[in-house]
Length: 538
Ligand code: GLN
Image (cartoon, rainbow, N blue to C red):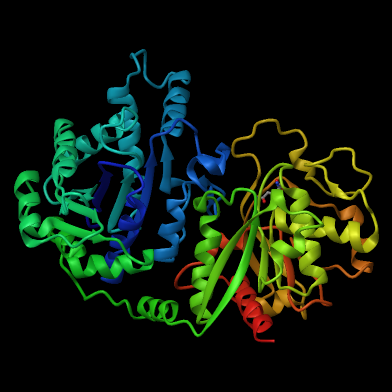
């Protein structure tokens, strides 16, 4: 077996430079050249996983097929590469310490003092090589969260230093992503922050092999030369990463800059074929040359932060391109919607998506939103909590169970049409205990859902929730016209609801947004956007 090669991506100067996008773009190019590539992310916080984090902290929590609650960058990896990730692709400081401490309790350290170096760093190094050792990958890209110089990042930086040393010449390389700011007053791009950041990395014993410089303006040849000289990298290793109109442009921009070639050269790997980005570029062409425009309302309670609904927004980009349609996503705060103002806030939308979420805040606004969409024939798409709200709305306003609710919001409601799952009842821990990951769903022939999925009978979709459609009310809701078009074949739990008295009304208990990629836009999003285009043209 050939030696797996490792690429480490570190960040300097500031956070939010887009390490995840650079890592995903490089991986895309290497994949397109014929290398089996994966990306993993190491996050320096102490939460064991981001599952317990409020979306306002780090944005959405991304869920993998194997039920790992992970950093949203893994979503970018999947959307770019179209290859599923897993728990092994995301490791946090909390997970590392938890596992070292568990080993210590089992007596595995044989009486030794357990320390950051070597015990924590060894655990990190082992995990950094875990996917590489599987034999499934030629190249493993490891993104180190945070910014060089952070106290929290130190054990990771030390682990990278040791690994580079362990792996030996040509088997690894370090990319440093920095910012080259433009000072308007001076009319100049400045290299000093990059120089300092590279120096900080050097103090930890790591030499950056490639600099990727985020910038708002083109880097001149002189400036590239200066960066190379002062940061001790070769001239072709200064890569410009200029602001792009869409993240999906970045692989092409990196190709133009030769990031993939210089990386392969440093890893002593052949260039193989020129990257075949035909399908990718077709996607981009359709994205940039839309024939229609639609306005879709995204109704949720975390709308202030774009990253909270990252995968949903990206799924709309994929579905928009598939429909040659520009999708304007208009965020609507569910907390401020009520019966009186619903028409004001929602009329004029070509489609309405009610977002996933937890807790009581904003749910009455979501229920009003569903009512408005249902009564006014506006294409409606409910995801997870959004689907649950649709069941509650139907129970309240069509059947007349005025008190219908989810036991998440009101434990004593007379009509708990959504209630906690049996197996969740005695769980008190919050971390990693929901119904998570890929579960089967069987689709009912002849329904909208079955049509959307191209006539497939069995699908697998990813979940992240504790509450469910309450089977006790199934018959009555069905009799009243609510169609349950998808159920879990093993448990009978309802996964999809829809209405056939409406042009497009569907709610899903799972999260389809996690599985939408550039290569495979999710059919639910594609059909929803299509329904919005149809509505608008009427
Ligand atoms: N809060 C709901 C539940 O736990 C919905 C979760 C979600 O939207 N992801 O079932």
